[in-house]
Amino acid sequence: MIAVGEQAPDFTLRNQDGEKVSLSDFAGRKVMLVFYPGDFSPVCGDQLSIYQEVKPEIEEKGVELVGVSVDSFFAHKAFQEKLGIDTVLLSDFEPKGEVARAYDSYVEKMGFANRTLVLVDEDGVVAWTYESPNPGEFPGANIIFDALS
Amino acid sequence: MPDLSSAPVPPAGPDDHVRGEGEEGLIVYADLGCPHCAAAWQRLREEPGRLVFRHFPVAAKHPRSPALHAAAEAAGRQGSFFEMVDSLYADRGRVDDPHLWERAQRFGLDLDRLEFDRRSPETEARIKRDFRSGIRGGVAGTPAVFDACTLVAVREREF
Image (cartoon, rainbow over all chains, first blue to last red; front, side):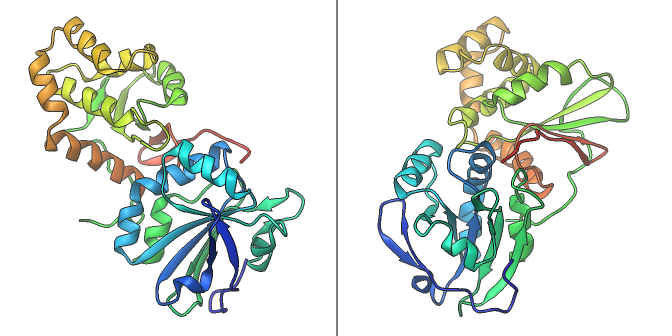
């Protein structure tokens, strides 16, 4: 897991609409990167669905929620539509998992990112991190609010 | 608005939806649109002692859930909360508004009042109160079962 206090590695990935999004686009704002294993998995669906329910309150705290997984942006679009969520989903697709690796979140033997949260502050510095003990568990939304309080 | 940082789930209170009797018992955070909750409910409802039901509708996962929780809450205003919950879980294919009206008639409820109550701000606030307490308690999927305010059962999944 990337260490708190490090400069967050910049990246440019496509979002669910195929548009390029860079971490540096969020300069001056806080962003919570939500690395998750994959679209359409049961736990990922629950995680993003529950986060969606409290997303307005996360945003009230000045934080943008951004999901990242190794899926293609086409899959992201379908997943977003299936769940009825509007969280931005970024495609860490090719080279596969490059960004997850840069944040030391990639699980080589599984081929996807572990379930991790990384709060990047207004200056692009890692302010807080959380890594689930295994991909089958996800941090409840309370953990996000603990980090933001 | 109070924050959503971690806090133990509240113990059973006088305005909780409680089935059974006793000083001790389970508290379940459940989604009325969730098939896993429906399956678990068949066992939970047979548990001895007190059982507290708390609303945890996740609309993104189950778009019909908010309406179902509102209907149950409104039925509860007329003394039929658990009748509605049992019925919704027992017959998950019939959850549109006409099906809710049919249930209301079957339970002998005042339909106009049910329709008013399920759309009221008080109902919305009551459901949100439960949901928020679940979020603060770390509910990350339904059903989530607490014993003495400690999480004791969740669905286990690989990822």
